[in-house]
Image (cartoon, rainbow, N blue to C red):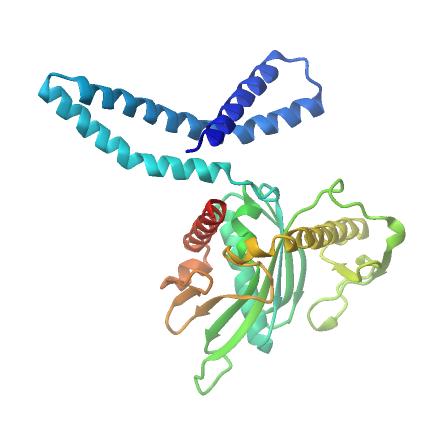
Length: 359
């Protein structure tokens, strides 16, 4: 690695030590302590990789000296064997350090809002949207995440026209962000007498959850309507005007919430979804400036992009972005095997970013 990089690594190690001493010394205010703690925690994995690499380099230097100057043939052979093992480890340690040094997606640590909507395919698309919703619900349970239903529009036949949920926990957005896009299903609908395979689709949008400090919403920019909640088929399920529709006038975004019996709670949930959608718009605008980099990564996350096919007759799931096929359809839909796809997507994204950084 070049000298300038070594200088940069030295600066990171020094900063890590400074932060450790400052945090241990006490006397910091709450906000300052939180800011320095985050910087320190962000540096810890990087410094760990730096120290691991430098330890191996130091061991290699000592072994090379031993191999050159050792008069004992057996000792020299032993040093050369150990040196060979460390040389094989070195590229992986350097790769891990380069990966740790890559700029982080600031939103990776956020919770997420997931929105699933039935696409082309009528009732079959709505049934598939319900399958996807349950898949993410089960996956969240397996990872110990909290899964909160925000809004649900059912068809009355078991399908979902639209479902929105908030997912909170560790690394939620980091692991789910590549799920955005068009999910396609190929299967024989239960209502299909001739046994023909139908193709339907549902769209998934994964948005980083935004806090009030991230997105300022002016009350004068909102039109808030209240009405009675309705169930499948439009029948009234509530005798009070508890459902809320919020329209953000500058953008035209509309959010409807009717899951809660309380108008106040529905308004709070609607604002939560609205903030996430506005934050996502800002995020997309920022990222459009990095279009070239985006093309080198796994996918844009655009919900119009077809990303995955679930083929029931063959029991397979194919992710088209990385040409990965798993013959584990049931386990993917139960959430058990979803990590295999997500881990592969994350690995591909890391490889693309490493290649872009080296170019």
